[in-house]
Amino acid sequence: MNQLIAYFQGDVRRINHALKVYGLAKSIAEMEKLPAATQEVLEAAAILHDIGIKNSEQKYNSAAGTYQELEGPPVAKALLRELNLPVEIIDRVCFLIGHHHTYSKIEGVDFQILVEADFLVNIFEDGIKKEQIKVIRDKYFKTAAGKALLDSMYLND
Figure 1 (tube, rainbow, N blue to C red):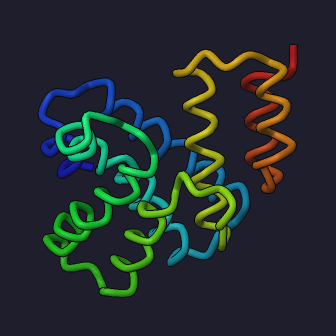
Figure 2 (cartoon, rainbow, N blue to C red):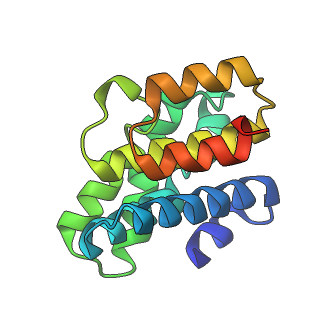
């Protein structure tokens, strides 16, 4: 988390987004009773999931998900190596970062929860309307915990 904050150097909007996704991913993982190793990967990926956005905007003048997926893993790998994490953790975190906007290829509960947590934050930040939220829920949410949070946050009046 400290590395993310230093990397974004005062870009509070991006830092806050990452912290919110992290908090929701951690909460969903705990409610879903993920194994500790899977949760560790998920939490690292949640913190760093948009780490590629800075280079995407500099190189392509765009924050599009495809560019984030391209630019994020090399930055994440460098940051994670500084922490001396095992290579299999680094590789999985980088895989998740490199695919977190590719919803057709969700593979693994860590990937699923990352997508759900990101949607929970983006729904608010992007001002998505209730009818579209229902579509997102039906199409992308699979975990009971993620669905319960989405319902509590956005659909239960």
